[in-house]
Image (cartoon, rainbow, N blue to C red; front, side, top):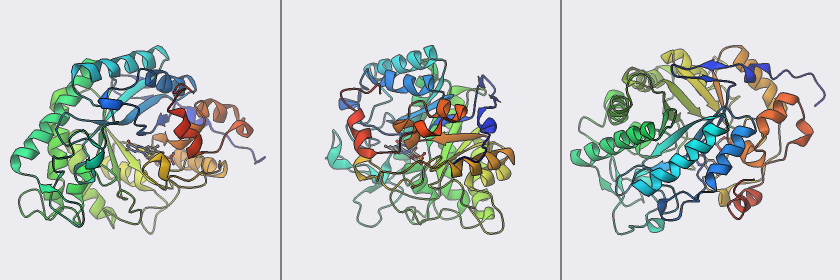
Amino acid sequence: MTEVFDPAPLFRPLTLPTFELPNRIVMSAMTREFAPGGILDTAAAEYYARRVEGGAALVITEGTSIGHPVSHHTAKVPHFYGADALAAWKGVVERVHAAGGRIFPQLWHTGLYRLRDETANPDDMNIAPSQVGRFPSRPMTENDIADVIAAFAEAARAAREIGFDGVAIHGAHGYLIDQFLWPRTNRRTDAYGGSAENRVRFGVEVVKAVRAAIGPNFPLLLRISQWKGNLYGQELAKTPAELEELLVPFAEAGVDIFDASMRRFWLPEFDGSPMNLAGWAKKLTGKLTMAVGSVGLEGPLDGIRVSEQSATAVSIDNLRALVEMMDRGDFDLVGVGRNLLANPDWPQIVARGEFERLRPYDPARTAALLEPSLGN
Ligand SMILES: Cc1cc2nc3c(=O)[nH]c(=O)nc-3n(C[C@H](O)[C@H](O)[C@H](O)COP(=O)(O)O)c2cc1C
């Protein structure tokens, strides 16, 4: 703990087409379910602004439901459609901007993994690329595909209109876009299934429609991951060549930043190179990339919901590895999840080297943050 540690690479500015970020630290997308009926609690603006005041340069919001009848994870996840929901989001944007931060909404369709019994319309069947395993669902028709693509594009257009600084598309963790990418959940025999080119088609069409809706210079981030849901050992791409087949079409369709969601950022993605998924995404596409996964924490994410997660100790050692990887040019941005819940001013604490002030991640405490003091 006493070894000299220079966090400077985390605190270098980064220029994007439309603005400059003062440092590399991004609040990672985290569902908090403080939106009963789909309308975000007004206190959420304070919750996000607090992380910006603590030094995060950019916020990726919690996953938000696009305007499609069966996109929602649960009824407490905020909508990204409808006048009331968008007005609540506008309040968040204004508060985050007043704090000097930037913010992208994470646009989400859960597909097969929609928690149907916890949604407002449990009688409506989940949709998915194909019917698989124990999850009842309806294979998507071409009309369904067109409707979902239009809903993503409409949400992105709304994001720009209400003042967001960019958009983030959830293409990871086994949700709808990822369900198309992964052969185990995509058994289609039409143009959207089979070869990598076909499996990436749906996501690429989403990105193209979003790009058309937001124009050429508005930042577009796409989240990707190897792991699915709570199936942490799964792999989308087993080799760099397989990864390239999936990521290059996304880059060509208009992605500016790949958000590589890992569970332990320091682990090499493929044999023969120390690079992680963010490193490979950068090498293969030439785009900006973000690394996420246990930054400054010992234990990896082990549950989708706070109630399923374990408490985890702080790690300073892995921050040294992080800075080395950034200095080597492996990736451009660093996503921080649980550490920013436990420590809203995590970036400032790290910048000042006041590591003894860091609190470990405690899901019980995080759950209590929901009410009554979201602003903590
Ligand atoms: C409470 C909680 C909710 C999350 N919700 C989302 C989500 O809505 N969308 C998403 O892409 N990732 C979600 N994640 C994953 C985080 O964005 C991040 O990738 C993960 O926590 C690993 O980063 P960390 O080790 O710094 O926490 C969530 C994580 C947590 C802890």
